[in-house]
Length: 212
Image (cartoon, rainbow, N blue to C red):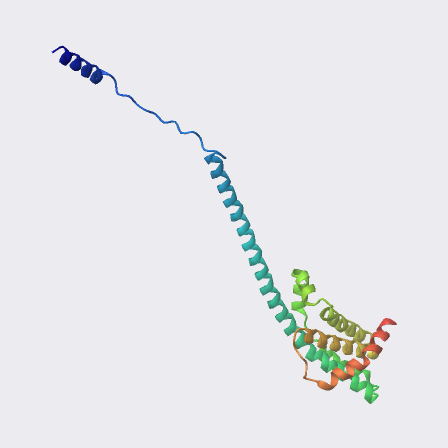
């Protein structure tokens, strides 16, 4: 009975004792803290996002410039072609008058005035003001620019009644127009005999204008 009493007392003591709580403290893992990793990941993502946006914008800008350059080239080329029709006719008028030894300058000048008014360079002037850098890329050798300069010289010749200067200017303008169009992939074949005449007299024309 004594042993039974001791056993019951021990059981009562165990039941009355508060439950034991075991806490495991995990040691921090080696390396950088987790919050630092999160910040780095977010930063890298932001950098890639900005870089991607810049790359996309650059590509879009290049594509826009390419399309604009193509459209401007087409318009300017069409304008040169149209004007070259009139320049060819004016060059032939002057050369025929010189070959025939026509002394009636008034009749020749009348024909020139009647045709030269159809020459229009509005598109060239517009893009020269608004898109000058693209214009330089389209016409790096200034053949289109010199084409219009020679036409202006011919107009001055009309005012001064200088038929020789007009003839040289129209011939040079036509030659420059041919060259510009050929660089744009357009082979001018409308007046096959004129180009050879212009090319043959181009050196003489350049020398003559240099002394003007």
